Length: 71
Image 1: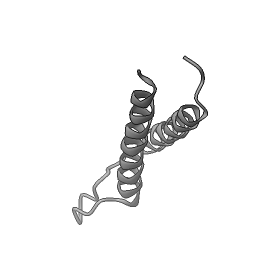
Image 2 (image 1 turned 120 degrees about the vertical axis):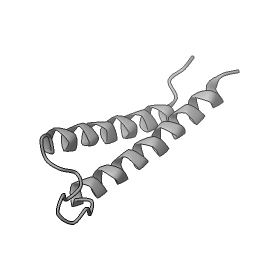
Image 3 (image 1 turned 135 degrees about the vertical axis):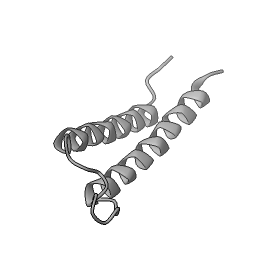
């Protein structure tokens, strides 16, 4: 199978998003994701939620591109 630049780019985007998720999780370690006083999600929770949703979409894109590669 030849390298497909679309797959390579999609994997790089997915990898970068996973790195951002890992970084945020590490920075947030030991802290509350939900404010215990107000029961409202913290800004980091909202950011993590967006990153995880982005990662899911990017993963689906990678899978779709790979499935297109299979004969």
